[in-house]
Structure formats: C-alpha cells, structure tokens
Image 1 (tube, chains in turn cyan, yellow):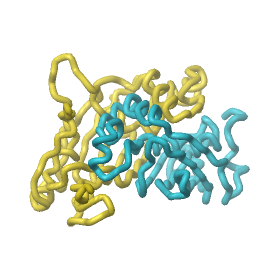
Image 2: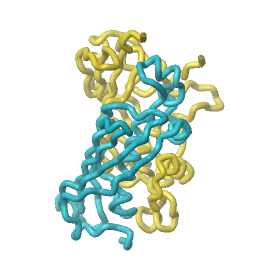
Image 3: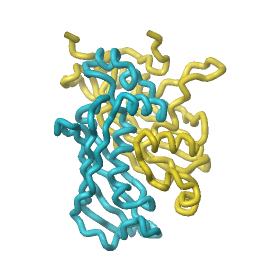
Image 4: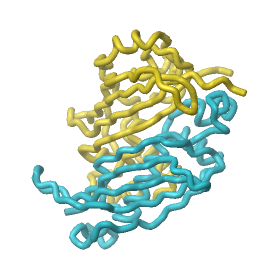
Length: 146
Length: 176
C-alpha cells in the first residue's frame, strides 16, 4: 500500500517485533477513563480499587488491547488491521507501573476462503510490568495489504 | 461517595444467574457516531501514532475514513457519563446478572473484527449471556466467571465485530 507497510511476501516467521515500553502514570490511567467513557471506579478511585484488593487504580481492558494493537501495527505499518485479538488479564497494570510489550510473529497464512484472499500474520504478544510479571498474554491476527 | 448508577449490580444466587444463560439484550445503539475526536483521544491515550487514526487523507484512501482503533470497540457503546434528560445510563446485560459478588474485574476478551469501523459509523450492539461458571476462588476472592457475547452492527446492518468477554464477579477476600 505504502512504503510504510511490511510486505507480507517478505516476512519470515518466526520474527521478533520491536519492544514497546510505556510508563503508565496516574494521568494516563485517568485519560483512559476519559477516552473510553469507562468510569468503573477501579479505573479512577484509588479507595475503590483498594476495596477490591488492588494497591491502586489500574488500566482497563481497552487500554491493554490498544497497547497490544500498537505493538503489532507499529511493526507492520498503518495499512495493516487487527482482525482478531484474544487476551487474558492475568495481572493488573497499576498507575505507576511500566508496561513492556514484546511481540513475536509466529505464522503467516493466506486465507483463500474469501475473495479477495486475506494475507494474515499471527502474532503472540506478552505485556509485562517492570517487575517482569506477565500481566496480559495476547494472541493477535493482523491482515496486511494484499 | 456518589456511585454511578450504571455500575449498580443485580444480586441473586448462582441458580438465578444460570436461568439467564442464553438471554439476549434488546439492540442498543451508540449515543453518537464514531468520531475523529474520540478516535484521536484514544490514540493519544495509548500513544499510538498510527496514521490511520491521525491522517484523514491517508485514512480516507485506505479505509474510507479515519479508522476506529479496534481496541476502542467496547467504548462506543458506553453511554456518556451524564445526559441532559436525567435518564439513568442503561446498565449492560453483564451487570444485570443476579449473583452474590459485590464487585467485578475483567478476566479475558476475544474479539473478531470482521470489517473496518470508520468515522461516521453508528454502531448497535446485542449482548447475550453465554455462560456462568460454578463458584471459583482466586487470589482476589470468591465468585463466578461470566461470559458474554456482544455482536456489533453498523448502520447498514453489517456485522462488524463479535466480542466475547469474560469477567470475574466476586466478593473481595476480607480486607485486612
């Protein structure tokens, strides 16, 4: 599509994606509630988060998903699109934490069951915190420009 | 503290919850169409410089308009935090499942994005209750895993996404 996009034909799997690191300040967690309209109190009220057994407020699923999508599309380019994403919330990312996203493209396939065929790459992403704890394992499929 | 109505949970037993498995909500339409402002607010929050979210001319050629970040899917159907007519924000089906747990946290999410969602699209969702687990104990407390399936359609009726979500509805282990 553009020179910014990876060429599906030239991707060799498996391949590691560039690591993405993001510091999650209190402001970022609060921006998250504003941007997603998800005002569940665990995302903005530390006292409520503590009543749930958490040390403080934490990012929501949409933020983790957006971070995983960014790891994938920063690598493949803006002409790619997430067509499937499966994630598990193993441990929360709290205000004050650092998120580290490490991705690995594990397979590529051409889906010929549709017209035109879809050029797909399967990616595994691990979102961890600064303690090396796995917070969110993600399986994601990108469609690349054909 | 003022607690938001939309997060007032329905309470009941596991058996009450099981009776709702298979129930589907009425279709619910977003309060507003997908907009460039919200696309960019979300992309700014994530620090995502993807041109599909920021460069209107590029996005128009590539997708037919600024692309909605796939991760913001659930956000389009969350009502605004206040409405002038004072009507309570409708609670999602998942909060209306009668269970004993006093709070919840999300556990897993699996989404298929069948078609690009772009600026101007108006989304409608139908939610179904797929399953409720027997009682489980986790490090957070005792509760039930609740799985729902949301089907999102745009204004022409095309299904654009299917979102399977699992949350843990629990009562926190006794606070120290």
